[in-house]
Amino acid sequence: MRPPLNPSAWKWCAGAGTVLLALLTLHGGHCGTAPADFVAQHKAECHFPDGSERVRFLDRYFYNQEELAYFDSDVGRFVPKTESGKIDADYWNNDPAILEDERTAVETFCKYNYDVFKQYAGSWKVIPKVRITPTKTMSLDHQTMLVCYVEDFYPPAINISWIKNGKEETGSVMSTEMLQNGDWTYQIHLFLETTPERGDTYVCQVEHSSLKSPITVEWKPDSSESAKSKRLTGIVGFVLGAIFITLGLIIYLKNKKGTPRIPVPQNDVA
Figure 1: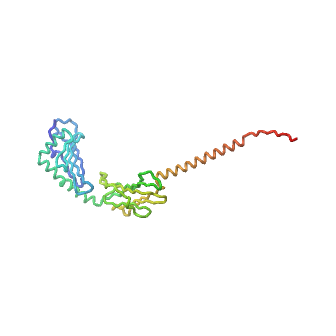
Figure 2: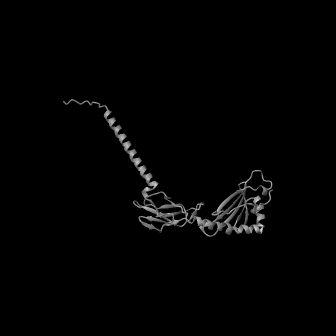
Figure 3: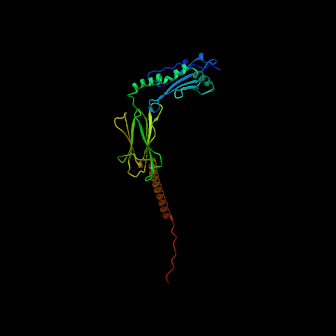
């Protein structure tokens, strides 16, 4: 059984602008009877939920791709993931100096690097991608749910609105929470419950700091996939009907032309 690992032996750095880092290192001298080839991995993570000031620091330790234990700033202690990791976690949790070092990392590592990152990322912007999709079977004069997907944008501040026939819709509009993609970009979905009629025009309008002018994506009832499918079905049905009628007429005329005439004897008139 290997002895507990000391977190101070796992070298980790706080490079400028780094908020999430993974450092792969080899530590043969601290792993006792470890095999000749092995990997000890240390990953320090800083989580900023919903872009808020609250920070969660995770200090994670792996051995040959298996997580042994991790420090969670929300808990304030090391949490074991395996039986072997429990030995490490118990050892570290009983060392006040190690715990103090981990707890202060929220300020000295996470917040410090985040402030540095913001200086460089303040002008970083990503243009949102916008599309509209009906979530129910499209049918005129029946209630339909339209979804405006706004994805892959940064920063998170954004304004989205539904516009029907030139007027903003507010009564039947719902929205998801702002969702993080994990790569500093965000996405959000805006729903509109409506009863479309022929000739209606729906627009999802997006305003964002990355744009010189708003993005507008238009959707019409007759532009939906189901409407296109119905039109296509009608056209195909009409063409097939015309073909069958034409073939039937040709066959009828041929049969009529080729039918032999049988003479009918007439009785002499006295």
